[in-house]
Amino acid sequence: MSAIRAHAYPRAGVLGNPSDGYGGRVLSLTFSDFQADIELRDEGLRIEEVLERFESGGSLGIEQLTDAALSRFNKSYPLPSSTQIDLRARTNIPRQVGMSGSSALIIASLKAL
Image (cartoon, rainbow, N blue to C red):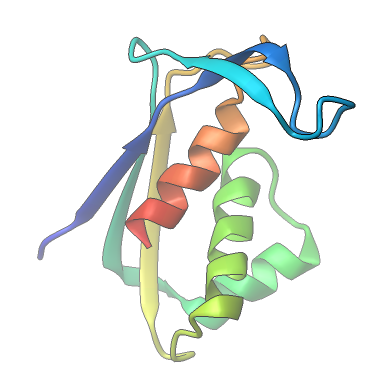
């Protein structure tokens, strides 16, 4: 069975912030030393089980982020409820240091989907 793989790099804002008074203008740098990796296979949980798990809020961390990306993707591009999906995430982006690691996980998930 083949797998789809995607990755995204972290970024650090140098100037501005998308939600501040700069009107969304930012200057950011990406770092290729770190990355978030996603592997997507067509086995595992049915799509409806993943969405139920996300809506119940029962998971934390990386799993919650990837479930949220899948939920958002499914709203725009609905997948049949019988679709089985195995989304595996791995990251070496340091946590809580301002490198947008959660955004990198979401972007890599959407790229794979």
